[in-house]
Image 1 (tube, one colour):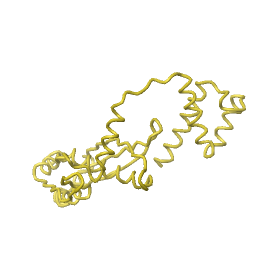
Image 2 (cartoon, helix red, strand yellow):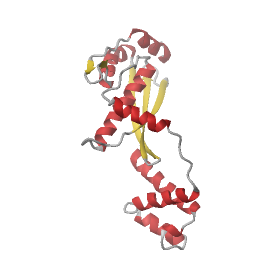
Image 3 (tube, rainbow, N blue to C red):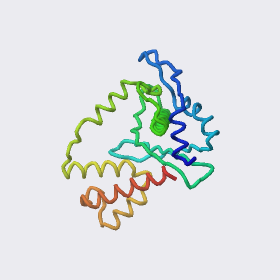
Image 4 (spheres, rainbow, N blue to C red):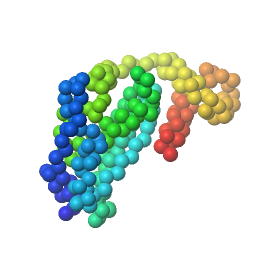
Length: 209
């Protein structure tokens, strides 16, 4: 069988039961771990490997998790299927830290990818993500983005650069020297955009390393 036939076989035969109960929402759900454990016998029998990879990027001052699943055919390693999903990492609250909220996002993304690849019903299956938080995120995403003026964008660039001054002091000071200014506020809009983009790229490279 090729990799597509193997995945089709799993799609038809896999039964991933919802053994967890959310008493607050009054519904049963399955976690990413539940799905993976249900998949293990099929992966062994059909000689498939499941690999996950996560990266973080910053967009509009929010952390976006990029989660990728890769399915590899052990019998023919050149045959592989790759799918990705972007998930907004929720801001920490109620005593949680960023590590915890990132972990929840990773679990949700992996489960969503496995459900998609193996056609598992994902209805009312939120992997312990608070429904109220999810609805808030949907509302935020549904809001049309305000079109910023050039001055507002410039102010955002300045704020972003100042927020990262400690980590990029040498880079920022060198940039000011090259452009013959004492303060970043004296830089043109184009130069501010260039510097802010460069800092953002450096941050993403460090996180992806």
